[in-house]
Length: 200
Length: 200
DNA sequence: TCGAAATGAGACTGTCCAGTATCATTGTAT
DNA sequence: ATACAATGATACTGGACAGTCTCATTTCGA
Image (cartoon, rainbow over all chains, first blue to last red; front, side, top):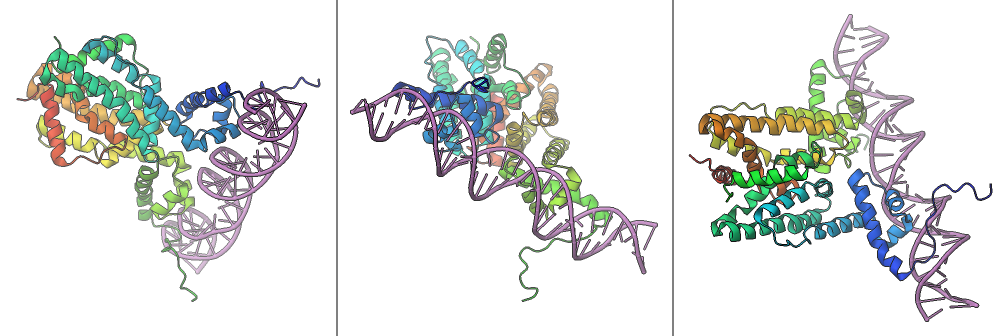
């Protein structure tokens, strides 16, 4: 009975290797994403972040300084990753469908909820999210519209983007809807294009 | 120097008249709206609510029980009031303009930010807001579309509503935009109708 | 007139938590 | 081999705040 009562599987102690250190920051941010999405910024404690990342409070403070810094870095990393996927060779229709799917994903909806909730405390995050997300999506739509539907169609890009969000997105922000299925996303994209008279 | 050092103008003490009691609940909710809009639910203290309503903590507890109850009552009262204004005799264009103006107002944007932020803790508020707000607006748009643009146009109501929100609404939720001017609202409404081919 | 209702003022309690400090421990880097 | 960097575990501190309680005050209502 000397060694029996181990509660939690203890975390590795001591100085980590250089490789481990590199990995660590991102490991903490990954965990932070999950926890913040579940509890929101205000209701998340550093201790929760530490446990989720299998790391001690101390390490989080030494890497990030405070809770706000973890949050901003987490959001900014995710926002940057929003549009890293270059379009392979897709048409306006498939691009539209991908945008619908992406923007209704649990991850992006949660991210928006977080940033909206904290927009007065962290205004720069809202800017980052908008520049790296919406604006790039609209720019891509504009390009496809121009090349596939003619130069006049380009100006419809913001309206098309808005329609791709649509009521489902609004309801998802309010927590009133589950993620859309791929089929529904494709159907919604088609209907949006049709509403603007953009069908071939 | 006996009576000199009054800090805050003291609130009236003692048992209130019947009339005062009636007025009191609504007075507290009015104050709560302002404070919650400014600080959010989590960062608002009961003491702040009390001071804003010129009432003591004790009174708030005796009227509402706890902070969450103040919040839910405040939101529900406001949501109910969202669509109390019956349309006088207006056209699709003026209805659309009014919707744009209303939905971009500081009050409704703030309310949405609050409800989105707290949607997991208070899911019923999201439902209330959606039913009393969006759904009624869409229903009215549908009616005008049917009578003014023909029966086929009715199905465009959700798309039209979405366009009336548009990017400006999204940006306002993120705190990236100031309220729209009346002129801009009218212009935006016109453009939305045009995009769907709904101009006469 | 007078008891009791309703309140203001504010002290008090218990809890939660951010952030810091301490000490032991592990392993890196040299 | 060994100094020390980085960490885990955990205790601690200070502040904030929800909710309760006490006591004095005012005024209602009978």
